[in-house]
Length: 238
Image (cartoon, rainbow, N blue to C red; front, side, top):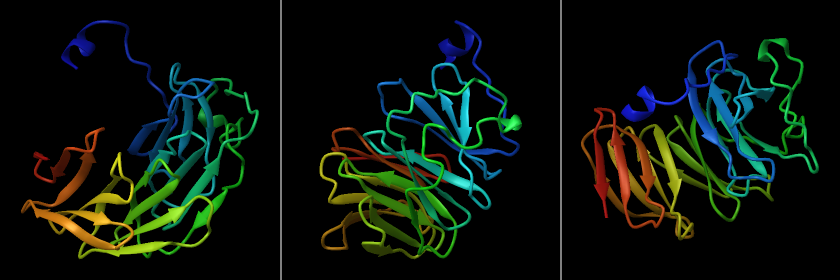
Protein backbone atom coordinates (compact mmCIF):
# COMPACT_ATOMS: atom_id res chain seq x y z
CA UNK A 1 0.00 0.00 0.00
CA UNK A 2 2.89 2.35 0.70
CA UNK A 3 4.22 1.64 -2.78
CA UNK A 4 0.78 2.20 -4.35
CA UNK A 5 0.43 5.56 -2.65
CA UNK A 6 3.76 6.91 -3.89
CA UNK A 7 3.98 5.58 -7.46
CA UNK A 8 1.75 5.25 -10.48
CA UNK A 9 -1.22 7.31 -11.65
CA UNK A 10 -3.45 9.16 -9.19
CA UNK A 11 -6.51 7.27 -7.92
CA UNK A 12 -9.86 7.45 -9.67
CA UNK A 13 -12.20 9.49 -7.50
CA UNK A 14 -15.93 8.79 -7.88
CA UNK A 15 -18.36 11.38 -6.51
CA UNK A 16 -22.07 10.85 -6.07
CA UNK A 17 -22.81 9.74 -2.53
CA UNK A 18 -23.87 12.34 0.03
CA UNK A 19 -23.10 10.40 3.25
CA UNK A 20 -20.41 7.98 4.45
CA UNK A 21 -19.93 4.68 2.62
CA UNK A 22 -20.62 1.49 4.56
CA UNK A 23 -19.25 -1.09 2.10
CA UNK A 24 -17.81 -1.46 -1.39
CA UNK A 25 -17.82 -4.80 -3.18
CA UNK A 26 -16.51 -6.12 -6.51
CA UNK A 27 -18.45 -8.44 -8.77
CA UNK A 28 -16.92 -11.70 -9.99
CA UNK A 29 -15.42 -11.52 -13.45
CA UNK A 30 -18.17 -11.31 -16.08
CA UNK A 31 -18.15 -11.24 -19.91
CA UNK A 32 -18.47 -7.46 -19.54
CA UNK A 33 -15.61 -7.10 -17.05
CA UNK A 34 -15.76 -6.23 -13.38
CA UNK A 35 -18.27 -4.05 -11.58
CA UNK A 36 -18.33 -2.32 -8.23
CA UNK A 37 -21.24 -1.63 -5.91
CA UNK A 38 -21.20 0.85 -3.05
CA UNK A 39 -23.49 0.68 -0.02
CA UNK A 40 -24.03 4.02 1.66
CA UNK A 41 -25.79 5.72 4.54
CA UNK A 42 -27.60 7.93 2.02
CA UNK A 43 -29.80 4.97 1.00
CA UNK A 44 -28.73 5.27 -2.66
CA UNK A 45 -26.47 2.30 -3.45
CA UNK A 46 -24.66 2.64 -6.76
CA UNK A 47 -23.26 0.42 -9.50
CA UNK A 48 -20.05 1.42 -11.29
CA UNK A 49 -17.67 0.14 -13.92
CA UNK A 50 -14.79 -1.18 -11.81
CA UNK A 51 -12.18 -0.29 -14.44
CA UNK A 52 -13.10 3.32 -15.12
CA UNK A 53 -15.19 4.17 -12.07
CA UNK A 54 -18.01 5.35 -14.35
CA UNK A 55 -21.43 5.42 -12.74
CA UNK A 56 -23.87 2.97 -14.32
CA UNK A 57 -26.91 3.40 -12.11
CA UNK A 58 -28.48 3.65 -8.69
CA UNK A 59 -30.58 1.00 -6.94
CA UNK A 60 -33.80 2.64 -5.85
CA UNK A 61 -36.23 1.69 -3.12
CA UNK A 62 -34.16 1.48 0.05
CA UNK A 63 -35.38 3.46 3.05
CA UNK A 64 -32.47 4.53 5.22
CA UNK A 65 -28.86 3.45 5.30
CA UNK A 66 -27.67 0.51 3.21
CA UNK A 67 -25.07 -1.39 5.23
CA UNK A 68 -24.18 -4.26 2.91
CA UNK A 69 -24.19 -5.27 -0.77
CA UNK A 70 -22.84 -8.54 -2.14
CA UNK A 71 -22.76 -10.13 -5.61
CA UNK A 72 -23.57 -13.82 -5.87
CA UNK A 73 -20.51 -15.90 -6.76
CA UNK A 74 -21.74 -16.35 -10.34
CA UNK A 75 -22.37 -12.63 -10.72
CA UNK A 76 -26.03 -13.08 -11.73
CA UNK A 77 -27.57 -11.65 -8.56
CA UNK A 78 -26.87 -8.87 -6.12
CA UNK A 79 -28.12 -8.70 -2.54
CA UNK A 80 -28.53 -5.40 -0.70
CA UNK A 81 -29.80 -4.67 2.81
CA UNK A 82 -29.67 -2.20 5.65
CA UNK A 83 -31.73 -0.02 7.93
CA UNK A 84 -35.14 -0.86 6.47
CA UNK A 85 -34.78 -4.53 7.54
CA UNK A 86 -35.42 -5.90 4.03
CA UNK A 87 -33.06 -8.00 1.92
CA UNK A 88 -33.41 -7.09 -1.75
CA UNK A 89 -32.21 -9.43 -4.47
CA UNK A 90 -31.50 -7.82 -7.84
CA UNK A 91 -31.20 -9.91 -11.00
CA UNK A 92 -28.92 -9.13 -13.93
CA UNK A 93 -30.75 -8.43 -17.18
CA UNK A 94 -30.24 -11.00 -19.93
CA UNK A 95 -28.38 -9.56 -22.90
CA UNK A 96 -27.95 -6.20 -21.18
CA UNK A 97 -24.82 -4.54 -22.62
CA UNK A 98 -25.57 -1.05 -21.28
CA UNK A 99 -22.50 0.07 -19.34
CA UNK A 100 -23.82 3.54 -18.64
CA UNK A 101 -22.40 6.78 -19.98
CA UNK A 102 -20.13 7.76 -17.12
CA UNK A 103 -22.52 10.54 -16.23
CA UNK A 104 -23.12 12.35 -12.99
CA UNK A 105 -25.15 10.31 -10.45
CA UNK A 106 -26.86 13.51 -9.30
CA UNK A 107 -28.45 13.89 -12.73
CA UNK A 108 -30.45 10.67 -12.32
CA UNK A 109 -30.12 10.07 -16.06
CA UNK A 110 -29.92 6.28 -15.71
CA UNK A 111 -32.83 6.04 -13.29
CA UNK A 112 -31.89 2.71 -11.74
CA UNK A 113 -28.93 0.39 -12.11
CA UNK A 114 -29.32 -0.45 -15.80
CA UNK A 115 -27.50 -3.78 -15.66
CA UNK A 116 -30.26 -5.09 -13.40
CA UNK A 117 -34.01 -5.40 -13.65
CA UNK A 118 -35.64 -2.28 -12.27
CA UNK A 119 -37.60 -4.14 -9.59
CA UNK A 120 -36.04 -6.57 -7.11
CA UNK A 121 -36.24 -10.26 -7.96
CA UNK A 122 -36.89 -11.09 -4.30
CA UNK A 123 -37.80 -9.14 -1.18
CA UNK A 124 -36.94 -10.98 2.01
CA UNK A 125 -38.58 -9.78 5.22
CA UNK A 126 -38.35 -11.10 8.75
CA UNK A 127 -35.55 -9.24 10.46
CA UNK A 128 -36.65 -6.84 13.20
CA UNK A 129 -33.71 -4.42 13.10
CA UNK A 130 -30.94 -3.20 10.77
CA UNK A 131 -29.31 -5.84 8.59
CA UNK A 132 -25.54 -5.53 8.94
CA UNK A 133 -23.99 -8.16 6.67
CA UNK A 134 -24.73 -10.52 3.78
CA UNK A 135 -22.96 -13.57 2.39
CA UNK A 136 -23.61 -15.86 -0.59
CA UNK A 137 -22.72 -19.54 -0.90
CA UNK A 138 -21.57 -21.22 -4.08
CA UNK A 139 -24.99 -22.94 -4.27
CA UNK A 140 -27.02 -19.69 -4.21
CA UNK A 141 -27.90 -19.72 -0.53
CA UNK A 142 -27.74 -16.34 1.20
CA UNK A 143 -27.12 -15.43 4.83
CA UNK A 144 -28.19 -12.14 6.42
CA UNK A 145 -27.11 -10.97 9.87
CA UNK A 146 -28.81 -8.30 11.91
CA UNK A 147 -28.97 -6.08 14.94
CA UNK A 148 -31.99 -8.21 15.94
CA UNK A 149 -29.42 -10.82 17.13
CA UNK A 150 -30.19 -13.35 14.42
CA UNK A 151 -28.79 -14.77 11.21
CA UNK A 152 -31.32 -15.84 8.59
CA UNK A 153 -30.84 -18.29 5.73
CA UNK A 154 -32.46 -17.85 2.31
CA UNK A 155 -32.25 -19.44 -1.12
CA UNK A 156 -32.67 -17.59 -4.38
CA UNK A 157 -35.35 -20.05 -5.56
CA UNK A 158 -37.59 -19.50 -2.52
CA UNK A 159 -39.49 -16.64 -0.94
CA UNK A 160 -39.45 -17.81 2.67
CA UNK A 161 -36.74 -17.89 5.32
CA UNK A 162 -35.27 -21.39 5.68
CA UNK A 163 -33.48 -21.14 9.04
CA UNK A 164 -33.01 -18.67 11.90
CA UNK A 165 -29.82 -18.78 13.98
CA UNK A 166 -30.20 -16.91 17.28
CA UNK A 167 -27.41 -15.05 19.08
CA UNK A 168 -27.23 -13.00 22.27
CA UNK A 169 -26.18 -9.69 20.69
CA UNK A 170 -25.87 -7.91 17.32
CA UNK A 171 -24.40 -10.17 14.61
CA UNK A 172 -21.88 -8.02 12.81
CA UNK A 173 -20.26 -10.40 10.33
CA UNK A 174 -20.93 -13.74 8.62
CA UNK A 175 -19.24 -15.99 6.09
CA UNK A 176 -19.99 -19.36 4.54
CA UNK A 177 -17.24 -21.94 4.71
CA UNK A 178 -15.65 -21.70 1.24
CA UNK A 179 -15.29 -25.48 0.78
CA UNK A 180 -18.28 -26.91 2.66
CA UNK A 181 -21.15 -24.45 2.65
CA UNK A 182 -23.15 -26.50 5.13
CA UNK A 183 -21.19 -24.46 7.69
CA UNK A 184 -20.82 -20.75 8.34
CA UNK A 185 -18.96 -18.47 10.74
CA UNK A 186 -20.61 -15.63 12.63
CA UNK A 187 -19.18 -12.81 14.73
CA UNK A 188 -21.14 -10.94 17.38
CA UNK A 189 -20.85 -8.06 19.80
CA UNK A 190 -21.20 -10.67 22.56
CA UNK A 191 -17.44 -11.21 22.00
CA UNK A 192 -17.88 -14.67 20.45
CA UNK A 193 -17.29 -16.16 17.03
CA UNK A 194 -19.34 -19.25 16.28
CA UNK A 195 -19.06 -22.00 13.70
CA UNK A 196 -22.56 -23.19 12.79
CA UNK A 197 -23.81 -26.38 11.16
CA UNK A 198 -26.71 -25.36 8.95
CA UNK A 199 -28.40 -28.81 8.67
CA UNK A 200 -28.22 -29.32 12.44
CA UNK A 201 -28.89 -25.63 13.20
CA UNK A 202 -26.39 -25.80 16.05
CA UNK A 203 -23.04 -24.31 17.05
CA UNK A 204 -20.32 -26.91 16.48
CA UNK A 205 -17.44 -24.73 17.73
CA UNK A 206 -16.96 -21.28 19.20
CA UNK A 207 -14.37 -19.00 20.75
CA UNK A 208 -14.66 -16.04 23.14
CA UNK A 209 -12.10 -13.37 22.23
CA UNK A 210 -13.16 -11.09 25.13
CA UNK A 211 -13.60 -8.19 22.72
CA UNK A 212 -16.58 -7.29 20.54
CA UNK A 213 -16.26 -9.15 17.23
CA UNK A 214 -16.71 -6.88 14.23
CA UNK A 215 -15.39 -9.04 11.35
CA UNK A 216 -14.91 -12.71 10.50
CA UNK A 217 -13.37 -14.37 7.46
CA UNK A 218 -12.22 -17.77 6.21
CA UNK A 219 -9.09 -18.32 4.16
CA UNK A 220 -9.90 -19.46 0.58
CA UNK A 221 -9.14 -23.11 1.45
CA UNK A 222 -11.26 -22.94 4.61
CA UNK A 223 -8.39 -24.11 6.83
CA UNK A 224 -7.99 -20.83 8.70
CA UNK A 225 -10.37 -18.28 10.14
CA UNK A 226 -9.61 -14.68 11.04
CA UNK A 227 -11.58 -12.82 13.70
CA UNK A 228 -11.38 -9.05 13.87
CA UNK A 229 -12.31 -7.12 17.00
CA UNK A 230 -13.52 -3.66 18.00
CA UNK A 231 -10.12 -3.00 19.59
CA UNK A 232 -8.34 -3.43 16.26
CA UNK A 233 -6.90 -6.91 16.66
CA UNK A 234 -6.94 -9.76 14.14
CA UNK A 235 -6.79 -13.28 15.53
CA UNK A 236 -5.94 -16.24 13.29
CA UNK A 237 -7.35 -19.70 14.05
CA UNK A 238 -6.68 -23.04 12.36
